[in-house]
Length: 111
Image (tube, rainbow, N blue to C red; front, side):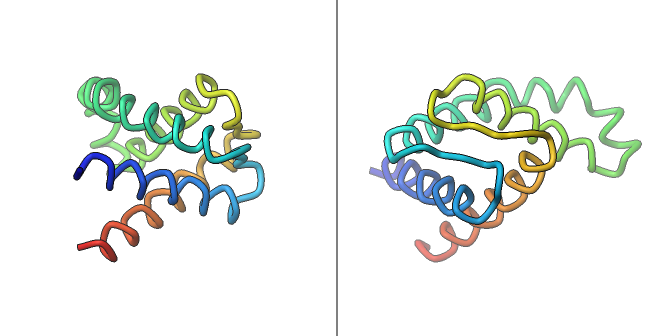
């Protein structure tokens, strides 16, 4: 049940982000659900490996490179999921920040 709640929160966060950020497009609810699952899988399996590999660069940039890694992972999810599109690096960067903030706020509301 907890997993279903997280999926619902992440799906809603994706839809809100797509509404707010131009160039960050989610075609429908099905695409949002699939994108939320894909982003969750990417964040579970690929992101920790990339964070370990990029640790020296992240330390040198005082953590900013971690945001860049997150942007590229969201762009990877957009590439993999039909109906979820990001048009450029800047919408991905802004969308990544907004998505994180919205998801954190929604998680805070549900606690």
